[in-house]
Length: 241
Image (cartoon, rainbow, N blue to C red):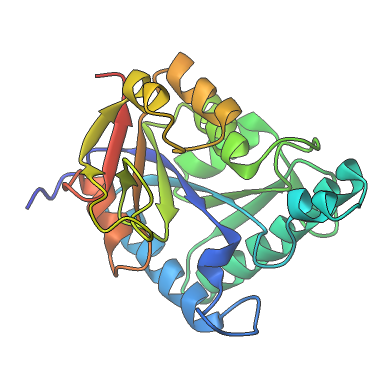
């Protein structure tokens, strides 16, 4: 098993649902937050710089609300605020175990979080702090997938680690098709040709145009974040070659 990290600076993309205990009515599980914090701390101990982009779907989904008649812009801003709540929860979990953490928001709220400033984010990362990017891009109509792609390219990350409920990218939905084939590696071009939903189209285009690798893996398996960072063959690697 390789012990030297393959990726030295990462953006970990977490869905809001990753913070919720399956079947629970609670939006955020302190136990899951603690587990994720411990896994991130373990990655930090390898000398890896860690930035996190977190969604808000466990609390609010702007697109779903707009489909039910709410103004899309308003619904999306509400979704951005949900990501702030999740980011603060993860920050609390990290700081409880001694990890210095900074939350940077694309929407100014000075009493809650720092504004997103690239140079400041880089300074934090270089000092070994975790940086959590919240409030999306600060604009409606953009997903947190797009935020992850944007921030990863801005900070010069080596890869995006996209944590999901499934163990990689399949040629069809494994929940409905027992014969679905999982890809260990796939190129951007092949993913486009096959119409595989690795990320939304804007996020995927940003990654493809800037040759940003994406590792899709199951966050439910313990220590998978470290395994992905080490370059172990888990999940699916999406890249240019």
